[in-house]
Image (cartoon, rainbow, N blue to C red):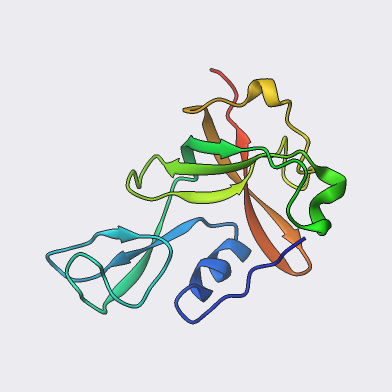
Length: 144
């Protein structure tokens, strides 16, 4: 499995994930406040270098998905096919977060029946520790 290689701008994302928090970088300029992902040093809206990390609810909707098979990387061959999804967070509609859809934290990447996945499906973030890194993954929310 591939692990993230954090840079200076993205390191806080992984530090918060290790605490079980999904946070997104935001501009801290008084007249802006735009959310941005992936993290970067400068706000693309107002060009301010001031930023903060805002706590997200962890809920969202599947914006897009793909089921790679065969996988492009040998490390994923045993779990193919599996779901890679783009999630639009409920509290950050202009942002897209990539991750895997799993049945529960720590479950195999092929643990969700493909018939259950739909564009617009509601998901909730879960965190799985892998080699000392907390990876955000997604589970389908139960129908209420």
